[in-house]
Image (cartoon, rainbow, N blue to C red; front, side):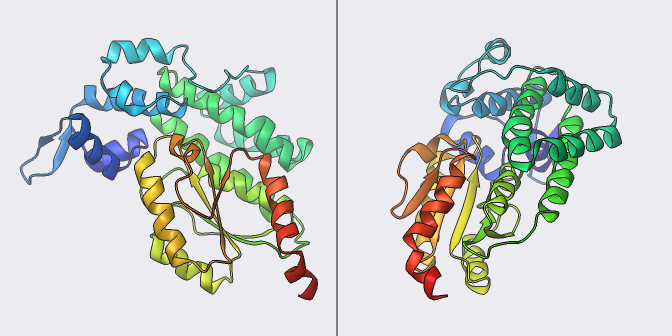
Length: 302
């Protein structure tokens, strides 16, 4: 039996989301330990893992939760929701092989060489994005373990941070504050966005994940941020996206833009006024250019 904290770490589903599903869908169905705390049976945790990965492929949790685990396992072998299946090129297959063999240093070196050879933008879009999906698919099929996925995430974060740190600082605008709302534990998308924005000569400050809305507003004021950029994964509850964006919009000055992106289905609905929805990493180039066009008078007088 696993505690709710252990389930959160193993599945990537937040404690708040697990409680919401418990109330809304009567799943999962935790028992209670001697202290009254929630504990979860292994078979429930396995179903939650499958649900999370199928959500990452664009499927809705309400439908998935109603399915027996055998059906979820069958779906996981070929379903990609709205996403196109990723073809494992020889280079991607080699990187995945290094992860499976636990060759951490070799994996870090190979990713670093790929970043240097391809250039950071091509590396993020052409290598990191499809490799993330391949790792997720392998995890969903039981071909890699949770600790191996965590290893991959940590190695990739080191490589991306080193690549970002090595970029020349040319411009100062827009000043972008990057973070996620409470309950959003996925940080790779945030780091990938930071890489793309830095390449566009934006000045980026990242708070990492799960920052309370009030603290986001305070940080934006202290950094004189002109844009607050938020990342939402597919497992983040759609209803909480709207509420969080509305609350943040109310606490920020009107001139500070909010950009929201990621794979969460709830982003397709215009959840809050004056929030710009970014549909892909490649779109950040046009978004930064659009921001500069909208603020050309301000930039000219600076």
